[in-house]
Length: 151
Image 1 (cartoon, rainbow, N blue to C red):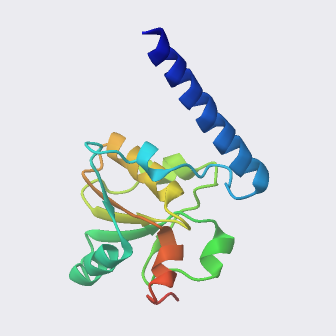
Image 2: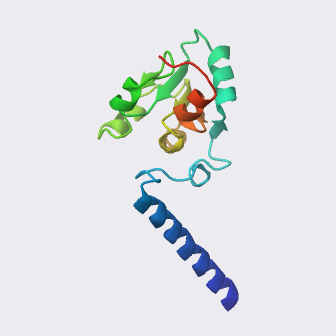
Image 3: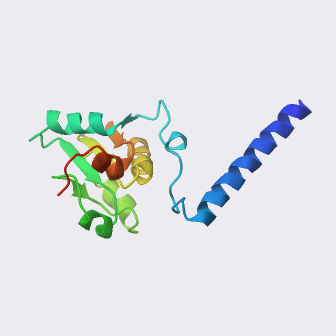
């Protein structure tokens, strides 16, 4: 039992050291955490890769009950976004209120730069009663790397 406790403490310390090292190196942006800790199974959030996201968008073209939701900052959005996306700035103080005001009956595909803010947003939406929420893994970075268009 003592060995198991020691192993658990060592793992926790190693994780803290890893996160601190990444944050100190500038490779981990404040607020960016692994997706696995944010959008786990059973959460009501469906994680999709960029190919699946693109298919969702194509399948719902012209459907007013389907919303592509970009939660990046205005500066990030200015560098390019997925056509037709609605933007709500994750870093804005009014963000939770703006998300809560959205129609819970619609289907949402949420994305950000790398997928971390969108995972948090999707989890928040699921906990707030949104039934149909997707989050795009890898964010717009993965979308661009796949060669998909932005406007």
